[in-house]
Image 1 (cartoon, rainbow, N blue to C red):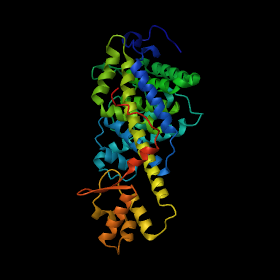
Image 2 (image 1 turned 90 degrees about the horizontal axis):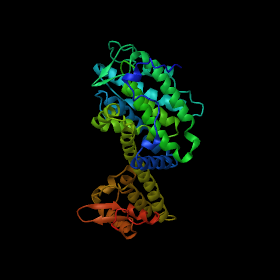
Image 3 (image 1 turned 135 degrees about the horizontal axis):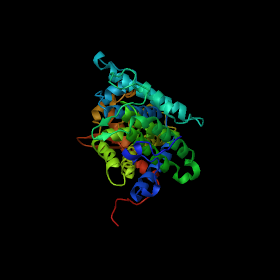
Length: 399
């Protein structure tokens, strides 16, 4: 592959170097990357009920697809994207192309997962990126000088940013893929740094493809898709790999600002983009881990309640057990509403008076399983599960 000084990008785009020193990453960024790596291991090692795991994967896919298309102007709502992913959408014909864009992206996400989770994932290449671009652009409005699956042959200006010279695009994407394949092969050299370095590499892949801007249209979507693929190839759990697209969409003004600064400020601070992405990744992972912990707490609570009623098979005790398990953990329930929480309770109390309900609730209060307050109703005392957590001092408390 020729690296002659005649390449025009060398003078027009000196920030495209296919190199990055980890020394440029600030201590704060390393802390964030370390937290992200730890939370990814936590997420990957958390046993989940199939329905919960399926829901977490589906929600992350929906947000990833919504984020990476919304930031480019697709006006479908997050709820509409959810319906498309679940196969229940009823999109009007005038917006069929927007639905098609979501379907294209979801299909690409799913195929990347299928191809890159095994050890024999195909290498990154310009040919692979072209094929993905062709699929991304299916059903999209035709634009002048945009050929799906082909690199552009004309200069392009996006805002104030001019893409790399068209005659250099093929060469630059080949260089990018060669660099990424080589870096991926070396990620395992230091296990402690594998995941943090994978995050850095993924964001740099995003940045470089954006800098090159090789396609006539769809470069932002392709850059975020490439970033997702790098994370999957590096072993990041699938739900976590979707988080960055959601982050970029939610903070799109900052996203575009930092992208621009990486090619205009002295030193071309790619590390600023790495830090910005790392912060969003950690925020998203904290939310996902909180959901997993809430699920685990719910399972522990159910197990605890069943243990408290172990061996007690009378009709009244079974009714009380089902009542406390049906109470929502996040709000107070008026006592008059407890018998309508689910069909089983409604049947259990069908021929009972309000006195029976009161007696059952008072019994649960005495057992320490529910709290009752006048004017508010009852709620389950799930906080008792904290007694089974490792003891620790409140880290937010003063010294």
